Image 1 (cartoon, rainbow, N blue to C red):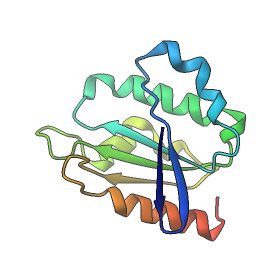
Image 2: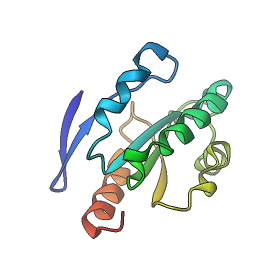
Image 3: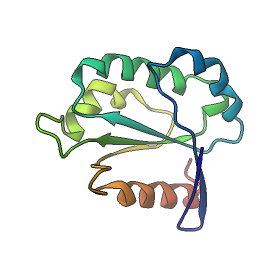
Length: 131
């Protein structure tokens, strides 16, 4: 767990690894009072995008997360062959999300690119009460 402050909002991050199935039953412990989901996708790992999409949509179906806004980071944009945000949008079928606000940002965590732009969007969205 990591606690982070950005623009007067208090963020608590929990890392969930979709390929580590033994932790899945514990995910729900963190769902109550969740206002936002930050979903990070490895844009260079096209082999795991189907799994990433399935996990993503399963999370969105959770009752306790129904009102949460969604920020998707299309990460590892610095790597050759990384899919852009439009391709990730298509791969994750983000266009099917109708009942909540969402946004996608191209990022390179290693270079620090795109991260704060996404957090700014998230902060503004949460402050506006549009979730």
